[in-house]
Length: 145
Image (cartoon, rainbow, N blue to C red; front, side, top):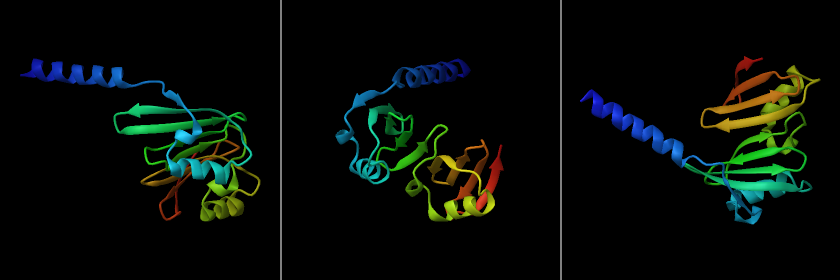
């Protein structure tokens, strides 16, 4: 019985490895509508370097990279999951107002260079490498340096 379970676990792990890919290039107009609207609203003057779709076991995921190095990731519905400016400041309209307010009050000399969100909340990275975590109601829940 143990051997059968180990064999099944190995086969499952191999299937996950085989199904993972580096993504397929797509045109921006093939992104979900919500993703296209987000890009037009937040990055109207940025030039797209590439866009791709990845087939994950949870569904499709999309990624857009701009020529300035900014990267945006979207879920299968076109909702943004991450905006990463590298070392550059991300557009202010990608950050919720209460998070911007907290950063302005508590870290006035720092700029936001990355934001991620999931069902539990938000995580932002400042240009000094400091990371702040917020819940879905924008209450600060933790720091990471």
